[in-house]
Length: 215
Image (cartoon, rainbow, N blue to C red):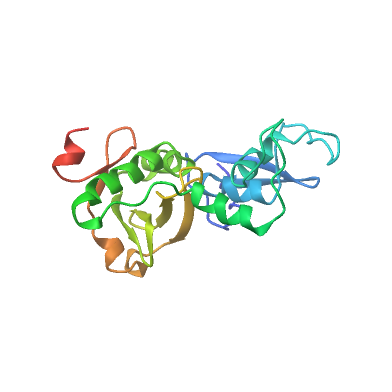
């Protein structure tokens, strides 16, 4: 049986049984692993079997650009265009972060639970589900991102690989984003190795302790 091709983006050898995604870069087909699908889309590679998107100016966008559009603020059809004055920017920016963060000392469990719920329904959560089926149960930790009080850092680690994602609790419209990944657990800082979460049956991330147990 021939070996699976390496991922065309990260170069990682694709494990047996791991899902492979086919993309077209120009006229060349490329194999992409589950973790690099979002990067392939940002590079505007077209999924195999999907027709080429409409050219700019035709009034349509290709379906493969949907995630990119969701990451950018946009005007609803029929609504007035925003005023060019700088004062409008100063008003619009806080509106996306309308909810002030609660004090970290007594509201931290709720803060982290919200981050875990968003992660489980994201592309990153689906990646963990798929890798858990292939690599087994991982270690996991959930903690505040250094220097960013409104963001939560989620670390999921197996014996030979680890991944980190960020969840911006202050911005409900911002998708869960990948922070970093590596191969050796020793590369992680001490805070990331505080294994205070686990991956339950079905691949969903849950916090350790009484509050997670009540889900």
